[in-house]
Length: 128
Image (cartoon, one colour):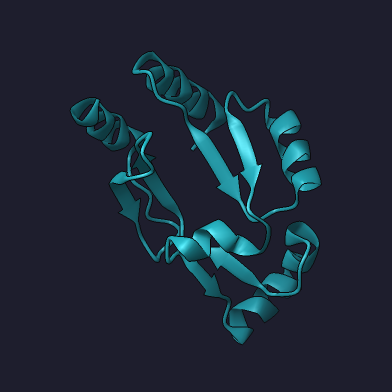
């Protein structure tokens, strides 16, 4: 999603009384750099070791061939994530209410398949 579209969605979600939060396994320092460079209009939180992702059943370990491919392209998850686990979260979009109950979830093992933000906003409107 382009930055302008992300920031528009942050605004639409805020108007509905909710908060958009991004969660990444990257280190706090790396996330701060990304947030500053991209001028994110929402919070980008760090999930060291994919601990939160694991609690939602979203953590997976990269296959050896995929790890090798990442390394060929100079992508070093050990550096980005601050650990040697080579784990990632499945991309997910969730609406979690103030009681901690997941009211909506869109998850796909294929990281290229992401729900349209309009879907999430429509789901949010039915929940609040």
